Length: 160
Image (cartoon, rainbow, N blue to C red; front, side):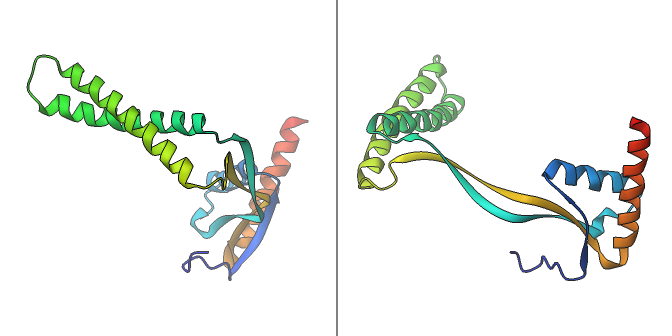
């Protein structure tokens, strides 16, 4: 936690199952002219979820390296094409792309070989919370609760 974020002096105003609901609650407070600078949305019960996407083979490492290198080479080629006088600047862009891809393949393969078989898989990580609480400064918490309850009951009457 950052040292400048302090939860003391804040009270839970409402709790929601997902982040979008908590955002809507703060938006409702804002629409009712509540001073939202005294609120926070806090994720509670955080978990790191890492989804394994597949094996990292030499072929895949080479392909990923080639793609990253091609982008970098394209950028370098564009710089050369812009700042080098000549009749065929697109040749410089093409050469940058090709040499970037070749260098990317080499770096991808060497990097994978040097990993020594550790972490031979691709994954995607995300942090999720069990619930999201809207907190308000203690001096404003009662008013925030009142406004959220009024907004909820008005919405229920509109739906009926």
